[in-house]
Image (cartoon, rainbow, N blue to C red; front, side, top):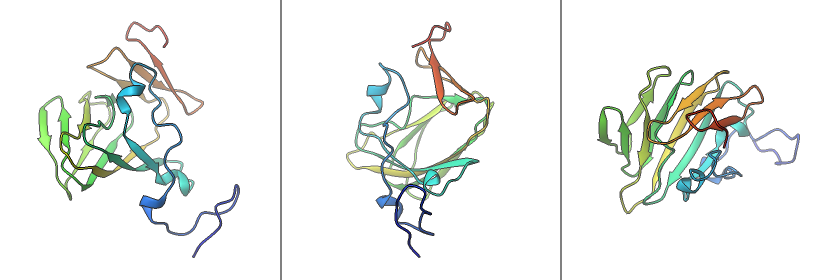
Length: 165
């Protein structure tokens, strides 16, 4: 079953995930953090189907790229599933080398900051799933950054002292 991809048209019942359009804005972070996301490619799969309660991204990290700044969410649970490559998962507990077929979850409210780093010469591809809980906030222990998910559905970033970027 297919449908034309016109505004207002229904999306096909199924698509090839790797053919989905890339996210138009590579990162929501303000500079100097935005540049650190260079190379990361996200395909927002959940948005294509109008999913409102959770998001699903097919993400590719070329060699040297990171998934995000190391962060923890106050209300949003996250889950990743590795499809290709061997990224390093960095959490408060240390580093874990992941491989295809492995997965990890990050419960909200624990304060355990996490991210993936591709230290290999091959691309890493993974699925990331997160809910869209209202009132979520992000903490970044390694950077001068705080984030609050606004009522408008957008992240608002400040320095840790509360001054805006």
